[in-house]
Structures are given as C-alpha cells and as structure tokens.
Length: 273
Length: 363
Image 1 (tube, rainbow over the protein chains, first blue to last red):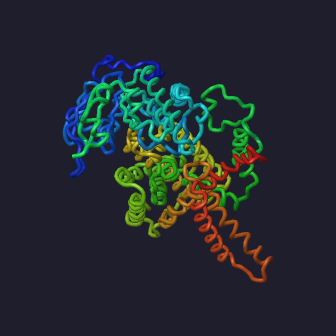
Image 2: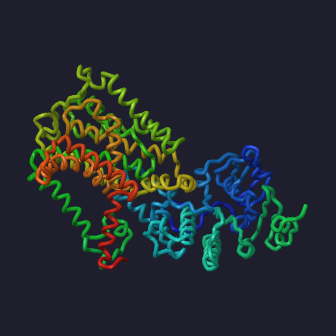
C-alpha cells in the first residue's frame, strides 16, 4: 500500500498468493445474554475467492460479519487475518488492516454527496494534518485531487457519473447500494464484506450488481465474502459457500455440494420433527 | 440570481472542487468583501458599526463555531456561552500579564485555552448522544459560569467582579479601550471573522471535515471506514470551542469593552443555538444569515415599529413593547423553521437559487 501511488490498479503485495488463506475464523461463539447467536463456527476465506454465507433468517450471518470486522466481540474463538491472530479488535483496526464492508440496510452518509461518500472511503489513505487542511491550497489540495482521481475511477467503474454531485439521501435504493459498494471499494480492501448487496432489487439491478461484484473480484483481485438470499445469484457468483442455521454451520463447500446437502435442504424447506 | 454555469467548463478536479464553481459567484463574493472592507467603514457611521456590524460579526463567528460542532459533527452543545467566556477571560489575563504584546495575538491565542476546555467537556460525547449530551454540556456551562464568579484571580480581584478592557494596541493602532475608533475595531473584527470563516470552510471541505460529517450522518459506518470517534469528536469540540473562544474575546475586547459573567450565561448559548437553527445547520452561510436575523431583526423592530404603529393605529407603542413584539416574532420564526425547513435560511436560499435557475419552468 503505497500512499504516493493511490491508483486502484496497483495491487497490494501482502505476501499472500491467490488461493492461500486470507482469513481464518476459528471456533467462534457469540452470545447476547442467554441468546446464542453463533455457536462454534470455523471457516476460512481464501485470497481471491468469492465466499458466500447463506442461511435462513436469524441464522447468524450478519453477526458473523460483525464479528469479522470487529463490531462484535465473540466470547470464544479467534480470527486470523493475513496471518495475524486477533481476539478482540476494534472496527478501526479492522479497517486499517484492510477489511471493508457494506451494510444490509444502506448506511450511507445521507447528508453528503455521492462524491463525498466515496471520498469518505479513502479517509484512511489521507494523511495531511489539520494545518494543511486549514490552508487547503498546496499539499492538502494536492492530496485531495490525487484521491479524487481514484474516486473518479471508481465512479466510472460503477457507472454512476451522472449522480456524482447528488446528495445520496435523494437517490433511489438501487443506486444507493451501488454508491455504498463504491465507498467500500474506495478503501482498497483486501477483504470486502457485502451484506445482502442485492436485497430488494429488481432483476436488472441484480444483474448489474452481480456484474460489478465479479468485476471487482477479477479486476482488482479483491477477496469477497458476501451474504445473499437469492440462491440463483449465490450459486452463480460464489466459489465456495458456507451455510448457517440457528448459529451453527451446517454446510461448507462448493455450490453444487451445498445444494445437494440434505441438512441444507432441510434447513431451507423445513422438516417435520 | 439569473446566471448559471452554462459555458463554464471545468477542466481540472481543482476547478471542479472550488468553493464557488460559478464565476459570477466568485465576483459577487469579492464584491461583498469590498463593500464590507471599504464601503461600510467609510459610510457606516458610528452607531451602525458599533451597535450592528461589530456584534453581528462576533455572533456570526460564534455561530460558525457552534455550527462546526452541531451542524457538521452532529453533537448538540449548550455550552457555547461558557466557551466564549473562557476565551474572554483568557485574553484578559494574558493581556494583563503582557501589556505590550499585540492584542490580536492574544485574541487568537485565547481560542487555544477555550479549545482545551472544550475538548475536555467534549469527553462525555464519546459515550452519550443527543439529549444526554446536551445536559452534560449544560453542566459545563454552569460549572464554568461558577468558576468565572468564584475564582477572583480570573477577573483580577476587581471588586465589581467585571473585567474591564484596558487600552491596547496592534500594529501601532489603538484597538481596544475607550479611545479606539469604531472603524478600527470594525476592521479588526471583520478581518478575524473573514479569515477564520475561510479556514473553517477549508477544513470542512477536506478530510477532517468529511470525517466530522461521517460521524454526524452514520457513526457506525464512519468507524468501519476508519474514522476514530475519539479523534473526530474531540477535534470537533476543540475547533468549535476555539472559534467560540475567539468570538468571546472579540465580544468583550472589541465590542463591549467590559463584561460581567452574565453575558456568558446560558441565554447566550441558546441565542447562538437559535442562530444556527434559523440560519441552517451545516452551512457557513447560514451562520451569517442566522446571526443577522436573531441579532439585527430585533434592533430594526425596536427602531421602526413604534413610529409605524403610531401612523397606522391611533395608539402609541413604546420601544420596550416593540422589543416584546420582536421576541414573539423571533420565537414564531424559530418554531416555523423547525417545522417547515429544518435546514434553515441557507436551504431556503439554495432552493430559491435552484428555482430561479430553471425559471420560468417548474423544473
């Protein structure tokens, strides 16, 4: 990660080759009071893959993402990201180590423009101090423009040039989701967590979003972990799938294996006890 | 404004991110500055400068300070009056200790004391939000007011408990005290306010301002994007208090000439808060509009309403009655704005410009 060359096309060399383990989640258990949200789950995410997390409502998928980026602290278990083992981690530390995410309910900065929202994603890459900012002209403006170039690349990539200066609060839902992806992407993450990127979209928007996800994965080599309910999309996009139900892992493997797994079918269709 | 950006193409991101992207706006701002710096002191007259322009600018600066905290960072504060007081007392103590130093240096430096105190009282904001934070800032207000009364060292053991501004110079010109001319004092306030507003607009459009707005709009997402709430919130409190402190020092040293603790009480805090609510949260233009309405409007009513009343009705109205009418009107305005346009006059102005842009078509 070189601060002086902020072009997105520069891949970061973190010593992990594609196909090696990027994230390892080890025996995580999370409970809120007496409610066990996640029970003893382990899985890994390999560099460069698209990993889907699926499961019925309340299975603990979003809790899992919240654990990975430090928003919840699991009672048991540990997370190893890029070879560093963590038990308790703050969201800020997750962000600095290269984990970025989108939210199930769009969590954009509603009072700011599309451009500012995506610029916000580059917060960690900007370093000019308060006094340069105060003066603005000179180094701070230089930095701002350098990062603006990267942001413009993302805007072009996501085809949202027309809404560059619109306040995001006024945008339709599908575009908001796209801006949110752009914001997460602007941080140049090693691991991108997408929480239901296609929820509430129509077919066309889903197709667009799927294309963007694949492009992000292939063009920038970003590793993606995504939660999604649309099985068609999941089976097409994901390299490997993990299935949760009631906080337990009931399936893990290639999409076609998971599809054939009897536990998974039971979880989705329900069985008579 | 019957002009638009047609034909003004931007060929660099620098030009595109300029504060006044339309050329005419740039001309207008220089034009207004020229009026403020040349025409007003030349033609203004003593009453206009002393009673209207100087206090208006002082309040506008305090409003900029509070807007940084409330409008841009989303942390409501009722401690503005006290933070202004910290600036005023700090300036007073410093200039008594070093009488020969340029007073403008001390007016600016007094903001630093205010910033430290403000950041300290901003610590609760890391844990609590909304109304609860309002209560803790109100506690800051009452505690500091108490300190201004109970620590006689602050007002130099003056038996009246007031701080009286001594005569001080800047660049060989008398700036404070009874013999300073209105024009000089006006120009000092104007320069400070213009420069500090310019700095504020720079900070807001940069990384730090963006991190403040991220905290305001969605603090969870901000944290996951790498903003540390500790730094963002405390820096907002510090910068905001810096502005309020300088405004407080200007208020006592340049405008009033002497002050007792009452001028920094919670009424002052509310007054500044009403200015930014009426003017527009999250808008620098709004600070000036709000200060103008809250401060200048009652003066106009005070002077104009009684004669008009005498003409259109058979009864007479005293000027103290006119003040009551002004207070009622301000109250109605605030309630109306909170319901109809929470983003204040600045938003109304923006809507008006947008409508005029496409006039005579609706959109």
